[in-house]
Image (cartoon, rainbow, N blue to C red; front, side):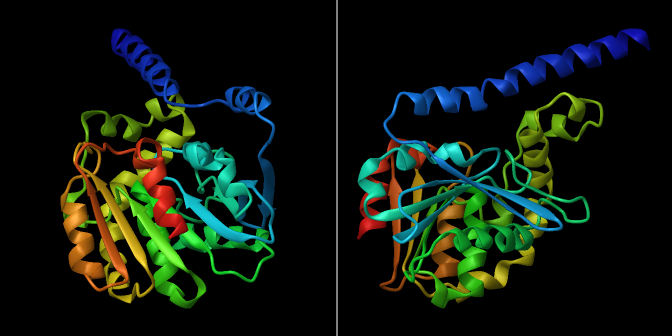
Length: 278
């Protein structure tokens, strides 16, 4: 029994160390921006049951772009775009931590994995913008169905929806060997919070995607879907699902990038910029 306990603790410490390799710390973010002439402007919005933490760039009277990250992730995952100063003179960039990631959260009475509740909270980010222009939503992976839900609920409010490597097909959800570790009660004490949230999100994602299936036909604004041929995280079924459910009319654009992996916003930043600016 004692040996099993020691083994479990060692496994916990090993996993915690492994996961931290993929986390950019606050110190590293500060060091990064200390080398630049501009800094993020951090905004905190609070309610009785939530806290929303957002990094903003550019002037708040310009057209807003809302960036929605995947799982696990944080606002800094879109740094390639946020650090591009050619955006700063044209747009107000809003990059929130999703609830359960970074410094944003829901109180316990709400499930962090709910696509509807995530969308409801992230929409509050737009209150930081003081222009009268319609926002552009740029989303990726697990953030894509959240952005899509926002658009479907109020299509007249938004100008464009961009989804990169969207995890949207409930029949094509991928599970990996390491996914189960985040479900083990003892290990959850050692694994960084964002990976615990990501595990909870993954195991509820199929149910959540099925629940929101009616939204896809309601997306009537210009929409761009990007998928990489070397994406091992989100399968090609999701790309085909988007075509079937959202449609193929002149306002919809589907871009397949054979050489791209999952992180299209980094590997194909210029292509993404073209689609944002068009």
